Image (cartoon, rainbow, N blue to C red):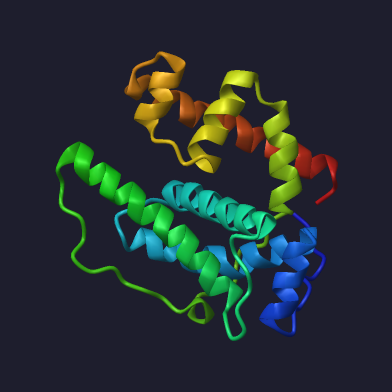
Length: 195
């Protein structure tokens, strides 16, 4: 893990501009600023740390893609960290609804919110965008497709199972295995880059 201090962005416009230019340090900063509070929020809303990591990565990726495609444009007065939190929150709420339909369990009646400023900023990560892209390219074709379909294209496990001609339970297990391989490649990539 890098011991270099994270950059400070005087305004949210500065942070948005850095993200638009795909500056690695901007993503590092965004992760450090946003993930701890999101992890806490997921843990108070029926999720584990792994659930939080999955939902955060998927939400952040959706946010990044929306910046790149122009679907998200910065609005004066907006907090970028709050926007990212909302993207990630939407991913987790969708997952909870999907799980509720599968198990017919009860979804929480209320969802606790947390101010990102109240959570200790205890997690600093390597650049997500480039390291994840490099790691994705190291996966075998079927694994890479599964991860992209699930996290980027937002396909359900059922839809992926149909595409791969597998059972949904098998796809769920394979998604976990592929995610673990991706994490291992990610750690190797970060180590090679001296982060």
